[in-house]
Amino acid sequence: MNADRNEVGATAKDALSIGELISRLASDTSTLVRQEMRLAKVELGQKAAEVGKAAALVAVGGFVAYAGLLAVIAALIILLAEYMAAWISALIVGAVILAAGYFLARQQLEALKRLDPTPKATIETLKEDKEWAKEQMR
Image (cartoon, rainbow, N blue to C red; front, side):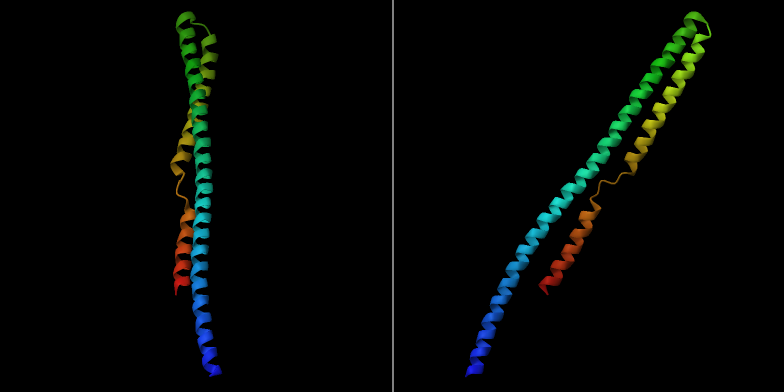
């Protein structure tokens, strides 16, 4: 009879443990999802910062190119107005500034094309979490 009590007690204890495990699994899964959301926010924030920096440098390149264009225009005006040697220096400076601006803008546009906005770390950990949850349910 004492053995029967132990078996009944063990069964009740096991049922309680299973309930606790399911509760703990639900709680852990909820915590994990919140942590994954925080990771996604951080990762997307980092990607947005990279895009913002590259976009700012593209704008700087555009402004430099604009300054070069103004210098080239000034050189052409000097050339047509005076036919003197002063236009040569203005043309050279304008061409160099224009080339520098073009190089900066082109370089940053290529960097933007290569930038992958996908939150890869978050996707990978979500896959791992899915596998973990499957294992826990077994």
